[in-house]
Length: 71
Image 1 (cartoon, rainbow, N blue to C red):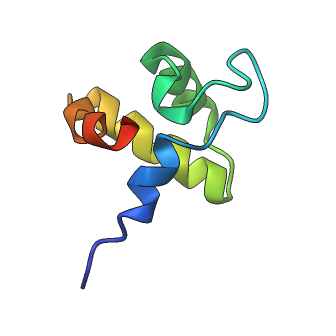
Image 2: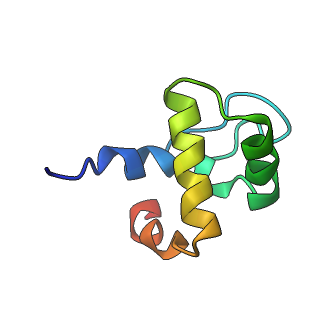
Image 3: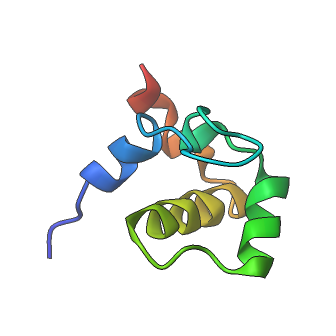
């Protein structure tokens, strides 16, 4: 199975559509907000999958994966 790199590209191009961090890139949403959303439950849609992905990246210290993509 080939990884879908578009998921990572979305994290550095898609903006948060609502809430306190509206209009921020998903990769720039603070981990504290992602932790709060995780405790409440991520939405059951593509945005929820993206938020869960960035949450996992941040809590596991893997943000360096996104740096080359932000350029």
